[in-house]
Image (cartoon, rainbow over all chains, first blue to last red; front, side, top):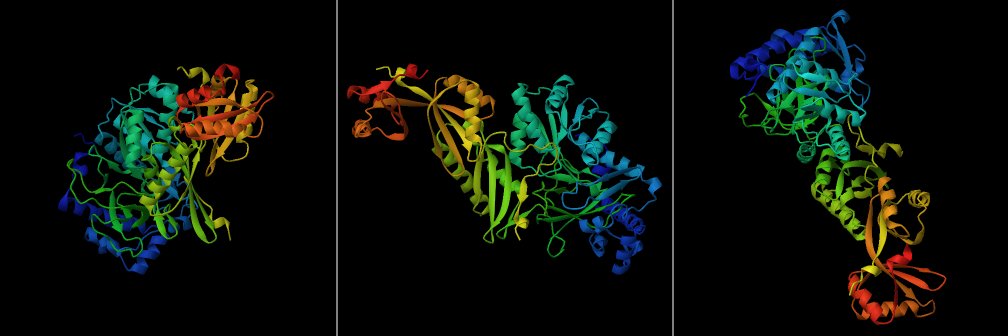
Length: 431
Length: 144
């Protein structure tokens, strides 16, 4: 087992709690430089010196995404602009983008996290790393780039686009590790298959920025010939790398010296126990430019109860979806990742799908367009109908919901290089 | 008996039920100078299968496949019918008496006779029965 920072990665018990409490106290103090937090702490009657143990975090109010949007652009910066050396923004898919600032120390902390993650899964300065994610304001590009350089890997900053060229680079440069979104990985796999290469040098896949199922892991591992690891993070927590799978690939270690994580009931705010699923709330412990207190991520997960054989700290379960991409269809909660999971269990249909949600006569109707698998086409109408019914039945089983399923031609649905947009909710279109 | 000469390759093309799909298929065949001798569309919930007999099935397959369509070959037989009342009844009776099931069928009326295209569950038995009862089957060559 390799460690980038063995002391911090394995920190446990009192030593860990003492460090977390100290850093939490510092974070509350740092947050006092932000007008929003000054007001919030005053109203809550909490001063930095009131934070004596980790559990004192529960004295703090929550911060919501809408709070951050209200501070657009720089309202949440806790340091003078001259100390801010970089800016990223969120994609703004759920509203106005959130602007995130970084001090030099923040960037160093972030690349340290990425270095830990890459080392944890057995990568080293011997590896060639292709970073096939957007390099702009999206945190995935530069975040992984600097972390991989810190490890000493040979970094190929391929970004997204020109998939054929991406595949050539993997083969010609002997790329051993690939980082991209799972949906782009699927596209790369399809194009590589058509180009007739098995990408023989590739051995590690790092996929993140959108939820992906264990089924998809199996498909990607089979198609790309990699061992695939899940990466978790968000711009508000620097970016990707806040939590990452170790070689056990059973949950993600959330880096306990840099993030204080809680799981709450999203409705009541009540703090939940390990094994109970709820919303992840994070208080970063070392963020200088943009400290956050009990930030509600909107992501649904739980703490895993069992200790990891690798020896590192607390793990969260793989993300099932964000509470804000959760669809409520006729009162039933549906995550697109569940639909994906079902579709992958039906071999006659392909990997790509699109969900339409409409309101017909005041009733929610969900229509799922899924691509046929080319090799499954027999030419017979009744085989197609059977496939269609099979998908409807499998979705009914998994979601307890009747859906319409449309079979569409292979390669006819849009492909995404970044985050896949799989849901088109048209209920708001009708007044 | 060898029935292969009477086994005709129909191309079956998956098509979403939306405007322009048939035009795309027909246009592609025109571009390749492929003649459509008979065709039908079977339609289900939101999609369909376009079935066609063409003079160059291999070329049609290649072209449509390259365009991204899902295409497959299906074995059918083509039998001449007398273009008079009772013509269809004669053919249907032969198959019925031999307990051969017609999965689907379509027809065209040519200059010399009407032709019935049949997709049956037992091709060999159908060919034998039709010939034994004096029917006339078109061979694959006659379509090329």
